[in-house]
Length: 98
Image (tube, rainbow, N blue to C red):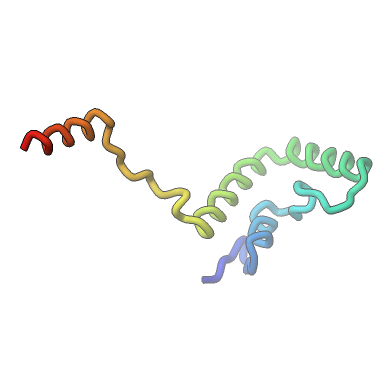
């Protein structure tokens, strides 16, 4: 199955997220061995982007849901109906009485 975002093919989950959000994931997740100063600058830039792009949060949530839906669809499936404990006990009593 091929996935396209804004006319570009996404070949991995991380590429899909980058295309959906319009920015690299490293901005939000950081990099290994980054210094405290680099982390502070990255988070400051991320805060500025969030403040400037009010639709980013919604796009991020939609992208995350699509990734979950694609990779682990059972997480979004409705739960199986569960019989209340009283109904289970009543059914057990009726079976014993019969």
